[in-house]
Length: 241
Image 1 (cartoon, rainbow, N blue to C red):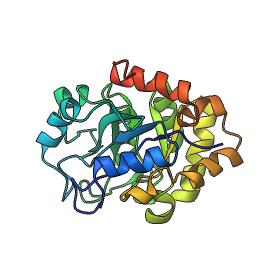
Image 2 (cartoon, rainbow, N blue to C red; image 1 turned 90 degrees about the vertical axis):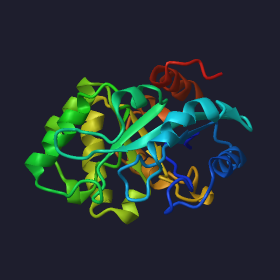
Image 3 (cartoon, rainbow, N blue to C red; image 1 turned 90 degrees about the horizontal axis):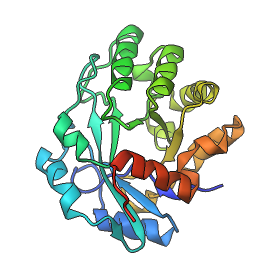
């Protein structure tokens, strides 16, 4: 089994990534991927692009490049434990694919109770499509009620292969989260969190982990073209192709 959509990628719009949108598209096309989600860090990241980047993105970048369907989105930063984000409701509604993530430069880690409250607030936000790399031990939360809330509010949970190596405790935490997502029937995606074009589509470790625990294939959205196109249309509100 392989992914057909890269759901989390970064560009030179932030200075800790090293490729353009089009270089990422070309890499996706070369690897046979059918979709690329452009999910740049939102403005409160230390080197994140200005909000104008996200305002201009939907109208500027084509939906189809080199045979790859491009979803124009963002990785919004969660700023506190009340669920505040660094893009406003109007901006979020214009985007195709919105990931919400905790990053320590944007929100100082606290305790399990606070982290749990934060994720429960995000679960209730209708403008958030995807829960970003939530296995980070620094932001550990009470998994059971939060995953149940993700299921209730139909959030997609991302399993981010990059996190297995870059965020403390993520490999084992993601396994525990995945088992609960399986229990509650939560839809999932596997991503690379690419910061350079050679990393596009490199989600194998995350996908392998889901296969090891017998995650239902029908719930892994980005391993099937029709399944992912349906959710892309659902989240973007557009036909796309």
